Amino acid sequence: MKVLGILGSPRVNGNSDILLDQALAGARDAGAEVEKVVLSKKKIAGCLDCGKCNEKGICVHKDDMAEIQQKILEADAVIHSGPLYFWAMTSQLKAYLDRWCAFFDENWEWQKSYAPKMKGKKIGLITVCGDPNPSTSDPIVHSFKSTCEFTGLNLYGVVKASASKKGEIEGNEKAKKEAYQIGKKAVIKQG
Ligand SMILES: Cc1cc2nc3c(=O)[nH]c(=O)nc-3n(C[C@H](O)[C@H](O)[C@H](O)COP(=O)(O)O)c2cc1C
Image (cartoon, rainbow, N blue to C red; front, side):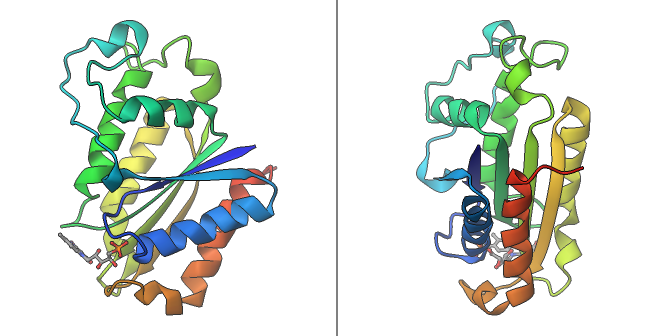
């Protein structure tokens, strides 16, 4: 069992990172092998919509997304964590998500070679916003929910939290517990 964590915040050791670490600790405690990718440390160009990936599922960009794509394929669950930037996900997370294009053919069906590993894959999402109402991050949730519904992924858990200053979430035991649980839930089979 492998759980991949994707950090969408450029603030390493920031709020989303702290919650992602909690989630990965939950997954590890439930017996999974875990790995974290910090998107801001990777080179990920924007999707060109050139359609070349429709043929074999390989993007024309020669950057770090190829290696991340492989990790996604191998993972049983992928947990994303990122802050709200101007009522949307960060540019790092959006560039990454757009590059999922390479998993599909021209009809937005999974590439045949990827389908067995991708269909129904567990996707988790953690959001943090400065606004005291955690639901201010709902545009990010909407994006992931719609993407998962459209493609047949399993958005099995969402955690929304509020924090502003770097590391402030450390004092939010409820959010940390919820994040830990989303990690555990990635591993434990649901009925
Ligand atoms: C460029 C930028 C835009 C932001 N936009 C919003 C916003 O629209 N709504 C909000 O509630 N917080 C906003 N924030 C605050 C962050 O979501 C908040 O500080 C969060 O805790 C950062 O998480 P991190 O430590 O994981 O990076 C913004 C922060 C930055 C840097």
